[in-house]
Length: 552
Image (cartoon, rainbow, N blue to C red):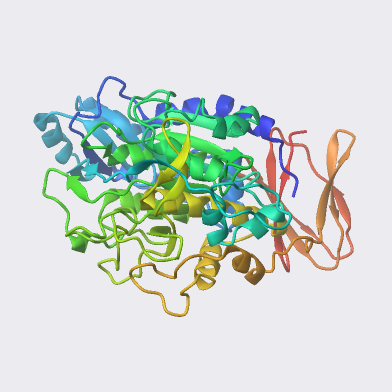
């Protein structure tokens, strides 16, 4: 499949889309994280007309996000489009300040007085109002001692893992790295606390020099500086991104990274859920493939009362609903199960209860569950966590810039997340279309206790080499069917095996259908019409493929 080079991709994202994202998701600069905020859920058609549809506008998506949907046969939905401008105008007319907008929830978070909230409640287009929950999490303790020496590495390998060898080998990821699948071209977003040190520590030098730290944004302070106020996010990032030959190599050392600060590590209340929701929507819009959240939440200050076990159904809390929405856009969502296993609570945290995602528990070097690792099931009976990875004395980078160890599902989650990125790279390299839920199920079914999953470690410790084999993705199997060939000022679409009828759907970068035509059997090439900007071809026949056509 023809892809734009990384520099062009990053340039388009930053210059053509980032400003629009920022302005549509955050309109109030002056408020602080301590401000009281409320969600206002909207029936937008009431503010417009009975026949109004958000899909009359332009989807809030980059070409990369549209391509991700096309490759997974996910249609554009109302939740891909911005909220009604008329609805936003009417909300502002009450005097309430809009802090965030959520296209997934069809809601806004507002800073409003009690009188303004009462006015909002009387508006016909307001479905309901609820406080923005403040969520408290338990950060994994980072042990102060250095990591132990690893066992000597044997054989010829793509990386000299050093102290991280055990945790990479435990999930049998090395064969994927050796086959060339180390996350290249896969976009990973981290929603976490501060990333202090990620801009200076040696483990990340390669990522910076290669332009693979694509974007940073602080949703707490509303700026781009995430390299302050705590280093939890940096340690999480290191388990995937680190590339220190012979010392410390992460699970996805060639991936691209988007660093989003959604939590205040110095605050007792670390996140207000609207920050997390909007960061996830940014990730979707920017074409992210995989999300990691290493901070789980078990205590809610929602103005009504703390949640209960019954709320862990993946449908009650806003943050879990948003995690499910993220998965439904075709992103792989990986979440720490939580560190409450030895407490009176003992259960998983939010959003680990969400549907269609991977919740990750912690194991030691012998595949035994860490006593602190939160357990399931969800209140509606689903098995959680899904998998377990190294979260007891995991190799990480400490705030000092030295390699050490840390414990918590906070580190088991990104170790797994990086491995999922490598597997997704293999899938995308060999298949034009795919389904992330199929990928997640293959990983589960090839884990250590797939024959008897439980509510302590789910399907067990994953085996990524076995998953790769089960999907038939061994290196060298790809036989191309289509090719794009420059021809003067146009492109020729060549079909290398013109034996069947194929319907071609052509979309622009926002997902708008530009044209539709058929290729009959025997027709081996056709000159493509010229359209401004990047376009996407969805080729539907006996098999399906998606091709990206560069701008003419």
